[in-house]
Image 1 (cartoon, rainbow, N blue to C red):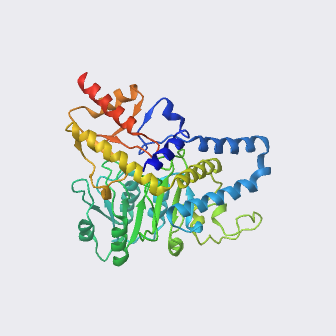
Image 2: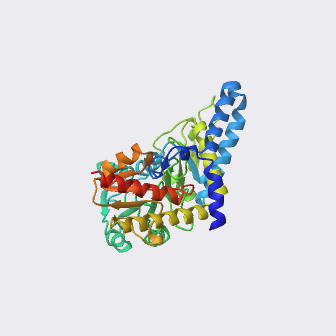
Image 3: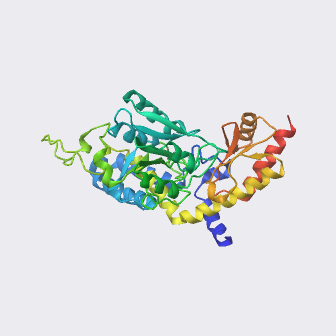
Length: 383
C-alpha cells in the first residue's frame, strides 16, 4: 500500500482544489481534474478556431469514450448511451417499458429521489409500487424476496445509498432477480468510479450514473446501460434524428429505430461534456479502480476510528463489504451548523438524513481526515 500512496500523491497534483480546500464531498458534486479541464479547453479551442472542420474527430472521440464507459461497466459499447443525468437514464426505462395495469415494481426505502419519483409516476398507469424497507440502514435480500410475486416486473436499487453509505451486494441481488425473471435496474451514481462494476457478472439489465460524483467529471453528462437483448423492449420516451438507423440520411424519412442503446440518444450530444467525462474515466482507469476502492475503504476506516474515539455514532455499516466511499456520522452537535462552520474553514462535507456525510476519494490524505475531526472538535468546543 505504501507504493500506492506514493502513486496517489502524484495524482493529487491533478486536483488543484487540494491547494485551498479539504474536499470530502465526492458523494455530492466532485471537483474536476486538470486533465478534465484540458479536455474541455481542447474542445473549445477546436470549436472556436475550426468550427465543424473537426466534427469527425469529435465523433471519433465520442466513440472512444463510449468504449471506455463500456470497459468501466463490463458492457459492450453498443449497450451504452450518453444521457444528461441519472434521472434521464431511469426515466428511459420507467417510461419506456410496456407496463400493464396490475404490474408491480420494487423500490427501496430511503433511496435518493431520482430513483423514486420516475417510478411513482407509473401509478397513473395502474402500476403498484412496493417499497423494500430499510433495516439498520440496510436493504436485506429476504425483504426483497417477500415482496416479489408473479406480477413483479422490475426491482430498482442504488448500488450505494446516498445517505447511509450502505453498499448492497449487487451480485446476490442480481442472481435473485434473474432466478425470479424480473428486471434489475441499478442507480450506480454513488459507486461508479470508486467500486468495480460488471453488469454481466451482477446480472444487471439497466444502469444509470451521472459523471459529477465519483467519476470526477462535470455535471450534465452521464451514461445509461441497457442490456442489448432488452433494447427493443424499451420504447424511447424521446425520439429524434439520431434515434433512427439511417441518422445521416436527412432527405428521406425512414422511421426505423436503432436496435441498441443508441436509440436513446435522440439528438445532438453534449460533446464537450463527453470530452470531460472521457478524460475523467481515463484517469480513473489509469490509477486502477481496485486501487481506488482499497484507498477509499482505508480512508473510511480512519474516519470510523476517529468518530468512535469521540463517541460519535457511525450510521454507515462498518463492514468493508457493506460500504462504499460514504461514511455518515452523528454526534452531540447540530450537523448543519457543523457543516457550515467547516465550510468556513475550507473543509467541505455534507449533511444527509440528519448526519454529517463524509466522502473522500483516492487523492485525499490521512492528514485531511485528521484536520476534519480536529475542526469538528473546535466547533463543538465553541458552542
